[in-house]
Image (cartoon, rainbow, N blue to C red; front, side, top):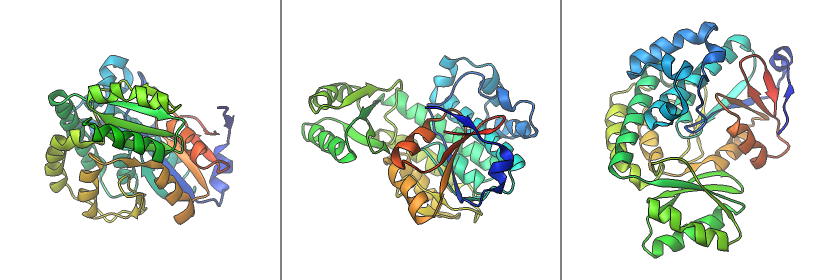
Length: 319
């Protein structure tokens, strides 16, 4: 995937309606806060640290990959790095017409802050509570996840249904692109699924995680998260956010308590969300903001021909 520079001045004059995308857990890497340390937005790190109870500066600047791989560490660090990038993007490009937002799993919380539905402090607190609850649920009931590549969502759903009919604890967790679906469940079920997937002519890759995210294995975490959500104020917001669970645009308000609770145990409908942003909300271009370029890649595969850009520390780049 090649990248070519796109000047900030050009971007600020475009009349295209942009959809902004925020990544989820899995894109974390050591020193990912470095590019933002000298920016005006770095003051957000103190707010996030105070609200979440984590030393976020340490996670963003000095933590190694093993430390960042912990669920709670990964989530608060990716949330903060994405928020720093968003803050700098709006500071540098205040006139760029952002029409709607979406975030993949954890990234939905960044989207809610960017949309004005959650304050930075409340978003950080919720992400901290969510990460701790998910880590606790995974310790109590370890799980696994794997990416199935090369088949349609329907093909993967049939394989998963067949496995469950045989007693396996296996579910569809993410529909990421037209030919990438992630499954989650017990370690045994995820390992056993490799055979049927290969027999169907598809590729299979077990992911380096110890939790079965977006599956019933996260129900204990949902109880703890809901308690935190019930204590959180949700504002009206200024931009629509397309929710993972139903791929529909929602503004602010208390509806996000239910949507966020469901999200923890429901599949991420990312392909449908991208289509909703493009076709229903009339977003003619996409901007991936945050660590990595995973979402830019998924968008290119889902909506070929639609412009996709990546906002980096210095300049955005066409992807």
